[in-house]
Length: 422
Figure 1 (cartoon, rainbow, N blue to C red):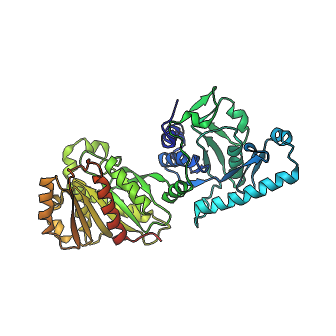
Figure 2 (cartoon, helix red, strand yellow):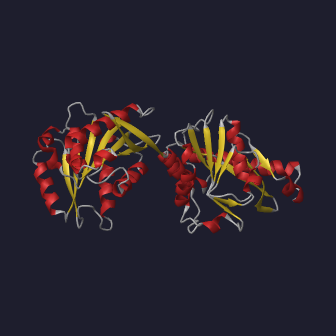
Figure 3 (cartoon, rainbow, N blue to C red):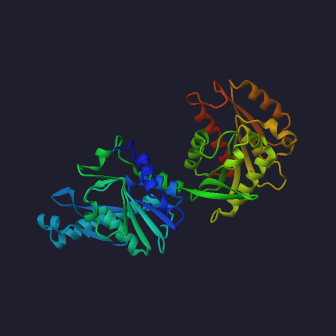
């Protein structure tokens, strides 16, 4: 088996770990290459993401050869055979460890910033790397986690040599690996793209905080969703998809990822259950969809701790945009901004005149009928609003660069009206 990149490997690994979903989990990635893998696992399992910072202890005469590894909380593992074979005495070993310990502390501070480590006490901890070679760093990470009070330690990697269980020993309670290879030479041989992960990428993945699966109770039904809430978020954008779509809409996911990178929280969820979606009429029941948005808004405000004062915005597409405007028109709505992408504001009917929050209408220049409907809707809007036309774009913004332009417009609108992260 070969993986396209670390993200694909993470998704494959997540399928192996699916039985853990619903447990009290924490996912820890080993920087740097293990973090993109861990981010996919955290997303799939609905678990928080953190790093397990480790450093290899290289043999003084051959730094690329590991004689051991260290992790946070003073955890250390040594390969006694390599230490003895290299003629490394206690004093020289202490010097190497001191140097690497300083670098470990520096990286931990750089990766997390002011965010505290996620507590692992009493929880199931999934330690993730992009592969196992010697196993020294993984063992050190597992020992560190156990020292911090983890109830159960699961070491999970996409690929490892056939004897990896022997190399890890009793450092973990469970080992998970979808690809165990007899002809193992190096981790990179199993990836088509094995480009080095940068510190900046690690910081960005941690800042996004991982995406967790959630369930939104909405008037007698339960709707699945995915919540991303960066630690410093001042606002969260709730997405309302169009007819025939759902929380996995590739266009909405594209926009949501960009908003998360800008420090905004996002909630993608299904407006209808599978049974309801089978009846096309429900996709055009704007009152029903608006009610679902209102339930999701209440839920996200209740579950946004410790984000006190978290502001909410709506990003609606097609019929979802009509639902967003309908819901925002409620006098009790806390919504601070709305963005409509290729929306049908006409379906919100008389509710348009009652919208009070700043509203951005984005329409493709080649989407003539919908553009006409949005221009007509402008006449009914008495809130601060703007109509932005993306030249050369059709209704779904499939033309090169057009969805990126929509994303930039939405990002700037929400940052202006919901507040930027500190």
